[in-house]
Length: 348
Image 1 (cartoon, helix red, strand yellow):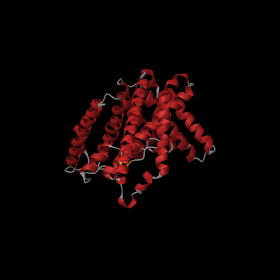
Image 2: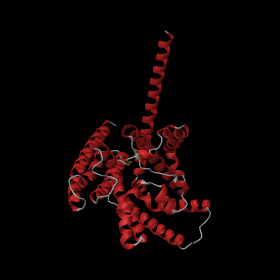
Image 3: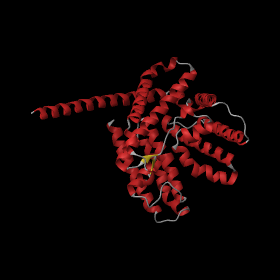
């Protein structure tokens, strides 16, 4: 833990310095090749930083934020597009570049009280409880049927990302007054693949792929080509992320997974544009989730399970859950001591 905290501090400092340089350099250059040349050293540095972590989770999450999201935001900045802009205050620029943060329009700023509403807190408390239960039940995974294993792994990934990003959102909101870009919107209710990938699952990814890949390709080759290109780039970037997990060259399975889904999304759009009939909502949701889990079992999870690193990932989760339990216990004891001290002081 101590070594990972030191690595986190070093990576955070290096990232902040690199983003400060990018802001300074791009503020003095016109969009296009001059800006691109200025940010190339930063783009070369970002892929190196995640290797500072030995933890699979920290290495992969930092790669997702820096190697994918941050790099794409810098490329958009070089082209003169948002969400980054040299006029942003330095702290906002660094945060928006290195984290999935969007600057809030004060006129549209949501009420912060919603984040502490009982329903909101209970929702995430329930998700945390389910995640802890999944980690504890992981020892029974080998005895599960194949379809249950995929559902189990999918729920594990979903809850892990949801909880991590909710915690980061609370920190960003408190320190910067900024919101994290939405990550999930109940993906288990998706009624089509387009609904699942475009509006419900991992929404930070389509937020950067639309302006950087989909729209330029669509303008030249049409909507179907734009969809195919966006899914292909997503597949290639997932191959990069999987490299940070298994530390081995990609096999192409993850790219194939996204290529298949891209072709199916394009086919869905073609069918809907021609007024083709659609199944009832419940049936559509069941079919969508079955297709995602089936192809995920076949292609998406294969590199991790084949390498055996799924066991290491679970061990890290168990350690994190144990650490949080101890921290909660210590906080509870400290709070009880404070209450007891105040009670005794008031009685005097």
